[in-house]
Structures are given as structure tokens and as C-alpha cells.
Length: 155
Image (tube, one colour):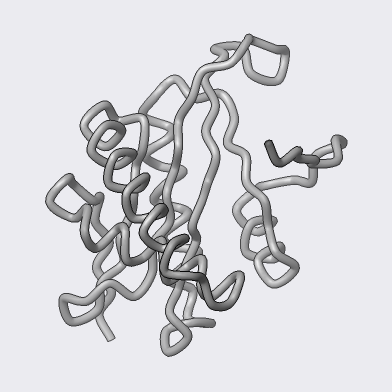
């Protein structure tokens, strides 16, 4: 099986939106039609704005011309810190490999390509939230657990 990696463009937006929906369903289970409509609308706006600005980089892995894996890198600016002197950081989102292609190293290749793309910019640090099953993949790529506990507040 020949896997080809490529950077997504705005022409891929409908596919990227579907991949996001597939990721959410895989992670959370079924979603309502109202949730899906809202997500599709927001993702259309998000990708239309951020892909041309290079503040969102998406890598697609394709087999026989069909997407089998993806990951997104969302780039943002924050106050500088000794761990991020440029103040530019990124978060990896939506690491998805379809079940029929899992455990073949494809996600590792996709995230590695995202890291390579990040190194072409002034990003100081890449963040991600990992599932237990994803930890070994990310640790192998050099990610380390933070000394901070990730928290969130729904507003």
C-alpha cells in the first residue's frame, strides 16, 4: 500500500470538514444533526480563513487517492515565555486514522510531517492532548508530558 502525504489546500475544505466530523464521531460517538450543522459551518469559516493565512496546516495521508489519515496544526500567538521565546505556538488537533489503516505507522508519518512544517516557521512549541493509545506515538516523536495539568472551562 502506497501512502502519499500532502499539505491540504482550500480546495480540500469539504474533505477536511468531513474528516473533522468523522474524528468527532470516532471520539465522542453519535452527534446530533444540530451539532453537525454547527460544526460544519464553523469549520468552513475556520479553514477558509486560516489555511490561506498559514495559521492552520493540515496534512493528509492518502491511499489510492482517498484520505486515510490526517492531522491539523493550529498556529497562534501568545505572550512569550522562556519555553516559547517567539510567543508563537501551535496545537495539534484531529489526529485521525481510519480503522482499516491503523497500526501501520501512518499517524506517525502525518504528525512527523506537521512537525517538519512547523520547523519552517517561527513556532517555539507544539502542544497536543493525547489519548492513552496515542501517547506512545507522540512520545516517540519527542513530545513530553507537561508539568501542568490541562484544564478547561466550558462557557
